[in-house]
Image (cartoon, rainbow, N blue to C red; front, top):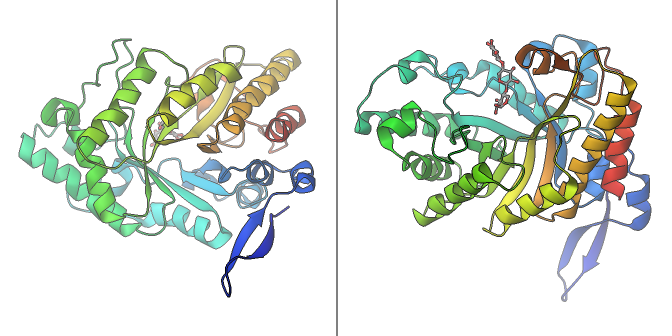
Length: 351
Ligand SMILES: O[C@@H]1[C@@H](O)[C@H](O[C@@H]2CO[C@@H](O[C@@H]3CO[C@@H](O)[C@H](O)[C@H]3O)[C@H](O)[C@H]2O)OC[C@H]1O
């Protein structure tokens, strides 16, 4: 169900096309992306991984823009995929995802430029001095952002810079260890110079409720701005566990702390894992947890959209990463919709 476009005549001779979101439209938007847009959001989307594209059941749903108006490459734009050897840039796999977005009319969230994981060993073990590593990082960012210039709605510029030890300090990784905290504003300023129209995000997990790590992420936003570099948003990854997913109120309070700093927020990697084998009671709880999370984004006007990581249990990274857990997405391993979860998301957008 697409938004009706009304033509509003304003001043003499000037005509502006504006989307009209009517009550009737909101009530009849019955797919994930159409419902999100009817609720005023920019998109509802999903991660897409190149290795999954050989399956026609997968691709026919992946390109269904009624459900997914946005896609994120799960792996193919990461440093190890793009610049596995110093100065040798390979865009084949990233281009496959970028072209899918273009062909299907989906927004592209580009992911990611600077991260301690999936970083080739020539960078992680290179023991470069400060000036050399700054030059390597800037060259990587400039080359990749320029290659995708005009195609990325947003870039996750820096991923997961904060420690998990409850200290709120920056992670010990090659960038922080060598360049210091300034690597963050340098990365954002470099990305902006290469594509001024892409929205630039800091993206992390366990920053979805107020607390030490969320405060550290807020401090990153402040620091980037204090250096005079641009930052447009914070990505709340939202890899949740069913039964201990934060409440709507907790997520809203946290989102508001970020938006008070003048940035957007987005739920960038939503999945809600359950202990496997899953019971029907657990799947009912999971539907409630999806609902709580969507309601939070619905209630915060600067929460621009939600991305699933991934949309189905067959291709989800969860069972391989969190042993004993799975069934984390709204579609099962046979690509069948989990009706309770799917409908809970739609109802939450309509709430
Ligand atoms: O063997 C690797 C395999 O382990 C790798 O898995 C990917 C790891 O990253 C996953 O995405 C991240 C999940 O959470 C956040 O921390 C990050 O922001 C995301 O990038 C991705 O879904 C997995 O497929 O894939 C490549 C294989 O060579």
